[in-house]
Length: 73
Image (cartoon, rainbow, N blue to C red):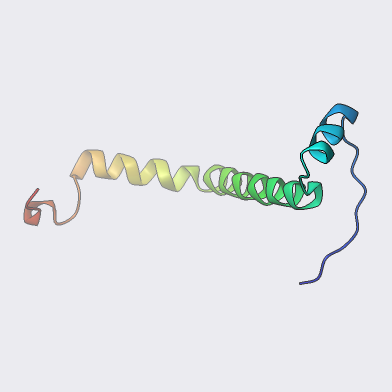
């Protein structure tokens, strides 16, 4: 997928520090947004599936792990 131009507003000191250090602000912002999107997708997935996760955890607590008798550790 191609790249698109967007406008961002940054704290002036942050931008100046990045420039002084020769950092690529576009790539840094992109990496931060990718990570934030991953975290948010995971949070939403856990929230949407919390009932199933809880039910499974309760089942394991009650009945134990399937095939646990075959575990050697």
